[in-house]
Length: 119
Image (tube, rainbow, N blue to C red; front, side, top):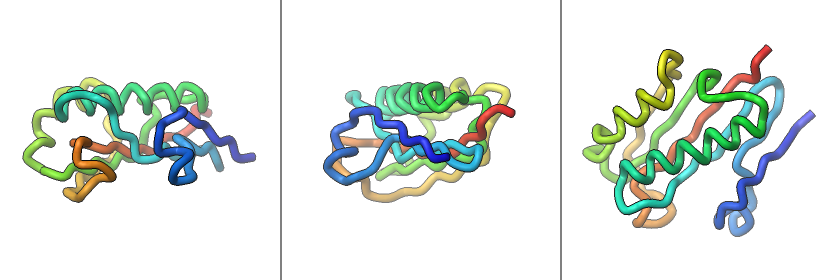
């Protein structure tokens, strides 16, 4: 069974995707940006959207096994570290950071995660 989770984000309908897909015991959360003036505010907002999708899917941040961070400027990644460390706590996932362009220059970070459903 496949379950699709929509968060109502502006790009979901425009591009044709959903926030998360639950399939095969895993939750695949699409790249997520957040609103805010700077990278740390956007990081925290993106994590909140991700948390909400995971809860709706039946899991949580402790079950995230993989995360990918996308930033247009890698120098902005370090200020996010405390926020990320707090979000994952004692259950840090495997992680990758990629420097690249995002869909709109106002966005400073995009976060994509894969989580396992609790057994």
